[in-house]
Image 1 (cartoon, rainbow, N blue to C red):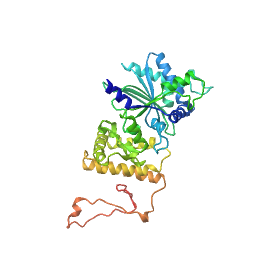
Image 2 (cartoon, rainbow, N blue to C red):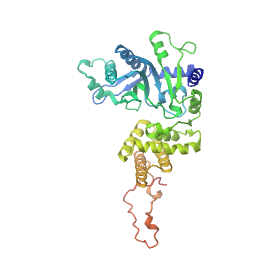
Image 3 (cartoon, rainbow, N blue to C red):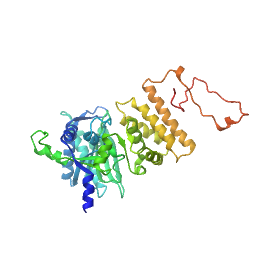
Image 4 (tube, one colour):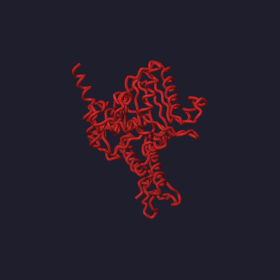
Length: 385
């Protein structure tokens, strides 16, 4: 029992005043939820929607064990300005989901809550839950298996800062890397908002607890401060953590153990191609990742894609040769398009074009070698110098 308590103590820590102050800024900042078509933009404070959803769930018989800020936003609260920008506002409601009826109830509560954020003058009586879903929900996910029971409702933001409300009974894997393993328990701060009229200060603020689901909180925090990459069993992560790993690399994060990560890269690639075996799925996943994780950072996209291409090229062992080349060509094509969008394609006079001779070209008797005309583009090989 003492060992369990010691492990729990190691995985959690009390936030400092500076961290609580940053958390307060995140929770009280108005975030726009953009509507499709003619629907108005909703101005939503995270603390307001979280409190309203929690209270209404409990009124409908769903007990909320606690509410947590998760992922990159939690990392931002703990360590500011370390080059790891946060996008989505990811909130976890820990609840019991014994059957699928609770999923429908949760969706009804969230959509009903959105009605309260509509501006004055809107006729709310004629707006149905289905209409609200089509207007404001970007993503709706439900997972109900023996080992995983959770749902996600993501509210749209055109700048990539979606409000993501996740309702979790059980989930096998809650993090990809140590630097995104933090969860900050919000209940004490939400209670303070409800009960205190005094502004917070260094000498008067609630005690807020942070946890690392990676394991040791101090170790994970040290990784975050020093921009280090660490993970456990990447083959358990959907997609292997490959795209996130390359995102960390492009932001100058470094593996804690270079040799070990060379081996782990193979596991990442293998799991990625298990989850996304088709080239169309790979393209959809990669384009979606670029769109959601590089808003306002367009110039980093090309460097990111080149890092991804290198990792896939050096560490993929589970694909046939033509499948591997197909994926590499896809990454190169997207990288070429990124350059075109940035008007950064180099002048043709300074381009060196590479080609890959077919095996039979090595035959000394073979002389009928075809040279492609210059007026066609072949994006198979990058970079061009």
